[in-house]
Amino acid sequence: MKLYSLLFALLFLVSCDEAPSNNGFFKTSSPEYGLENDIMVEESMIVSYETESPQAPSQEQKIIKTGNLSFETQELEKTHEKIKTLSKQYEGIIQQDVSGKNYSRVFQQMTIRIPSKNFQVFVDGISDGVAYFDRREISQRDVTEEFVDIEARLIAKKELEKRYLELLKQAKNVKEMLEIERELSTIREEIEARQGRLKYLQSQVSMSTVHLDFYKTTAETGVTLSYGQKIKNALQGGWDGISIFFLGLLYMWPLFVLAIIVILVIRWLIRRSKRTKSTTND
Image 1: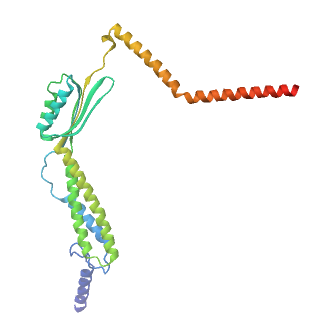
Image 2: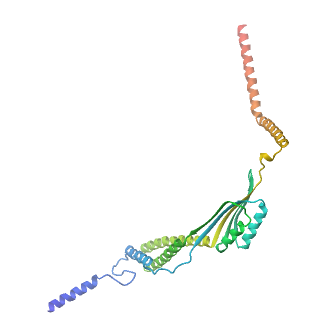
């Protein structure tokens, strides 16, 4: 009996020594630090944190609204002032305001950021009085899922950063410190990237964008011109053509001078050749 009791005690001690350590985050059974194994354990804990955490309560929808309006107006300046007044009234910001003129029209192009709560009333205010639109496009993009996903990953990355900071405090040598700091640098870059993406999405959600292109047609058609006007335009065009021709000749004066010099040299060579032949015959 004593022999069986002794064997049972030895087996019990061996099983206790070989049992996995369950003392928390860090391993203390190995004399080495075991950084790679600790990192693997930590990452598995973070994955478990992401997948097993209780579901967050329903979040308000995140919608990015965009409007593109293009139309013709007979009173360009009045329409421009109306849009600026509406933008100020509904707390908008004019990001771009471009005016220009081409062959057939005078145009105005504007980009306005407007609070999303005022988006529809702002668009309705612009549309008031417009007979028809060349283009009227209103789009809404739901980014709620992306928003929630980035927030969850950001929380997980911040938790991972805390765990690595705990590892850094227990590093035993410079090599281990450098390895942990390298991992921390990568994690912080990912955190900053996700924070930047969140800020961008929040900006797009809170402030909608409206692109405006309105114009006034100014070109005269041939039907409205009288016969006398056509004759006058033809004479004017002919005179302009002759003027351009003579101006072109003036621009080419170095070529004419060079041609004259070449002709004179050729004539001189011909005369000299003739004189040489006549002298030889004599």
